[in-house]
Length: 111
Image (cartoon, rainbow, N blue to C red; front, side, top):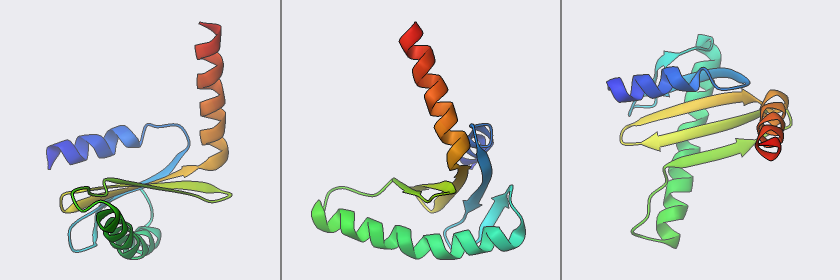
């Protein structure tokens, strides 16, 4: 569990992070940086979506498995790492994320 928690802590330091939720195998938030209501909503709604995406991946390629899911809305980007029995949900501000990506691209081009 310490690797999962270390990853959780590292994710909170990424640009534009609005919150992160660590969800156990039963779909319950066990660690979160968000309020309890938002954490439960994300955990409750994301579990069936991950299950559906995992089934689709396995139908396309039976020996493969879903490990990462990414969704973008106008306001946020939701990233889900689904490994073993745990799921980490990361919610980032789309504008802050875009700005960080532009700055990263600019610094690489000037190098």
